[in-house]
Length: 324
Image 1 (cartoon, rainbow, N blue to C red):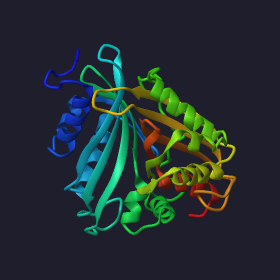
Image 2: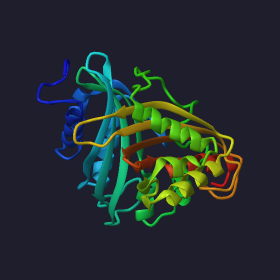
Image 3: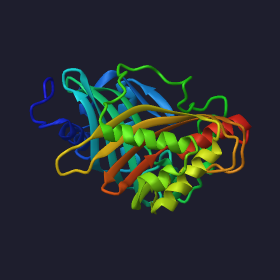
């Protein structure tokens, strides 16, 4: 890979290798090398600009979860070393809550949850990132309701006027990466499938999903079969029936020893005007960032991994309804 350390045999090896080096091997200082000084890291809960903020957040997480492991399940990527590459890295993380922090006093609870990180890299350095942790799964395993966590977070951050604002188009910051992925058929197929579903064509699910599909959804929820897919997507769309659905980035790949697969970054932007995944309609204006992976087999979509941050949606709702 031109411009990258020769010890990495390919881009997935680079992403998996530096993730382990930073988190598990405690090479936090290597972030000065692997991350650009002015990197933009967007998560649903906030936008962080600059490597110093990334280092501080990494140390805070490891202080709270010192035994955290990050198991890289897949890296779906596009681009070239010369022009820059975008990785969509899906991680299964385990950790024990051994330190005080954002999730409260150390509880000793053991956690298991997923993360997807979209990272742009060129010349051995990451300079743009979109990151979603399954906060709903984390707080539920802590014994906390996602809405209650969001309300408490607002209070701990100084109240409605002073608290950190979630990611929205208004709080976003431009970064160097402006690509939209690649034109591989599997990325296009998955993007078309979600577009049909978000356009209320729910018949797309029995037409495109394998009858025995495995589904990994926000909140650490595992489902199986087309009915589970229908319930998840129907409930989400019903909560925001008029919100604009946009696919911002799509990647498809055919790799040896792997099923055809796809990675999407997408959003819903609009009002919470329906009964659905977030309960009673509030009319709140929300921005929901989603990252999802899909694997395809001979009978359609066979595995799907979808992440968004429920607590960030609740934070937006609570800030607008005044129920804090």
